[in-house]
Image (cartoon, rainbow, N blue to C red):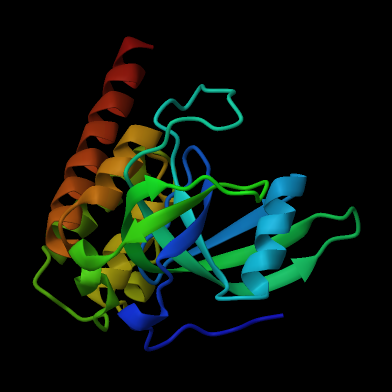
Length: 219
């Protein structure tokens, strides 16, 4: 089952949001995050979301090594809409979330559901709902940083395909797929706007390149 997300407004973003705390999972506006759902509490969360607003809040635990059932979470996450949904033979679900808008955790609620829910505030991030456009990010510097990093990692990028994306989609897609640490991903999520996120993305790629170069020199 597939669905499309378009023209979402503030009135469609629920004040109470179910959350899925997951270390290393970064969802940004217009990005797509595939997830395999197997824990009973999150299977229930997906079914409840499908029956209502189809929205789930992706958020990271503060401690990536925490084994607690209810780990402390960051204050900022991203609301995503279930745009693809499928049942797997082993009882698991496979869904894809499309990022809509970041949110702040106003407070965590005392709920009867097996999954956690928060009161979410979206006002800080209303610009996330604006249509994607080219807004002056340094695409040349981003291209160079990505190209040099992939050269050392023996990877390849189809920049011609990427270059057709609007600034928002380009920066957000690269932020989601590059192998950054959970803390770095949180920093990318919390960047004020796409220009700030692009600048941080370039810095992170350059830092990773330096680390790779140093490691190979030592070897």
